[in-house]
Every structure is written in C-alpha cells, then in structure tokens.
Amino acid sequence: MPLKSQHLRLVEDPTDFHHTIWRSGQTLVVKPESVFPDCCVRCGKPAEGNTARKWLFWHTPILLPVALLSWPFYLLLALVMRRTMAIDLPMCQQHISLRRWVTIGGFTLLPTAALLALTALSNAIPLLFLGAMLTVICSAILIGWARNPVWAVRFEEDLAFLQNVHPSILELDTLPVWEEQDWSW
Ligand SMILES: [Zn+2]
Image (cartoon, rainbow, N blue to C red; front, side, top):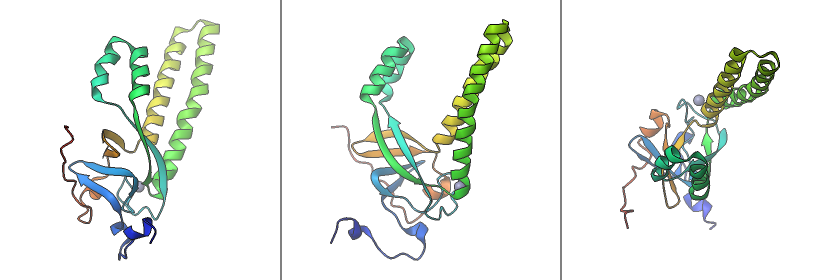
C-alpha cells in the first residue's frame, strides 16, 4: 500500500479529515506533509477544498538583538540561519479573493509612491516626499497582512508552530493535542 493512502480514512464531515497536525494552546503544530482540516484559517468556515500556498520563515529569536546593532549583519545572519517550510493553507473563497486583491492593491501603491517621490524631488515639495514614504509603509502593511494569515512562532526539527489560526480550528476535538517533547538535548 502506498504510504500516503495508509493515512486515508472515511470520515463523515470533510472538516474531520486531517493528519500529521496537532493543536498546542494558541498554536497549530504542522509538518510539510500536514493535511489541514477543511476550515479557513482566517474565519474557520468550510474552505471547500480551497488552499493557498504559504512559505513559512523563521529564525531563532536570539538573532533579534543583532538587528539593533547592525541591520545588514542581521539580514545576512537571518538569511543564512532562517528555516523555511511550504504549506497549503485551507482558506475560503472569500478570503482567497481578499488575499489576492489586497496583495494587488499593496503592489500598485509602489509605483504611486515612486511617482509622489519624483514629483516631490522635481518640484521641491518635502510634504509630498513624506506622502511617498507613508505610501510605501501602507503598501508593506497591506502586503504583509494579505500574505501572512498565519506565521511561524517556533520551528523544531521538521515541525512549525503556527500562530493566528482561527480559534474554532484550535478547538476542534478531532485534532490531537500536541504532546510536548524534550527538545533540549
Ligand atoms: Zn475565510
């Protein structure tokens, strides 16, 4: 029997079907091969099979003080020491569309910001330059919000601990509770 089908079983409700996934307090513990319950991670409603690919990035919080000392050095260390994992997050059609449109909106703000900065420079209007900077910040916030419905707060071996999953998913009785193991070896 192929390995994958060993996990398959009959369930009455698609939201009950999942494997290699656990709940741990406010986080969801996942692996790259995790199959999520069919519930939108943003609102908890049925995702009806829709998923969005999400790359998780994480690095040890020990690096954070380095950022205060030197940004370029921090970025270099973060790039080298980062852990990544790709997962398919179940999301309802409404939240997938929202994610797409907010991302597009965020990116279209960038040329607007460039135009404002150019106008500010050519006409010597400092206030417009401030506007350009605010537009870039807005763009980053919009894109960050749209692309990160959940984020990793911890990585252990091939496991990621996801924060910001809708509470109704964390309350699913069918999801096994993560048993903390001793990783301090
Ligand atoms: Zn949703």
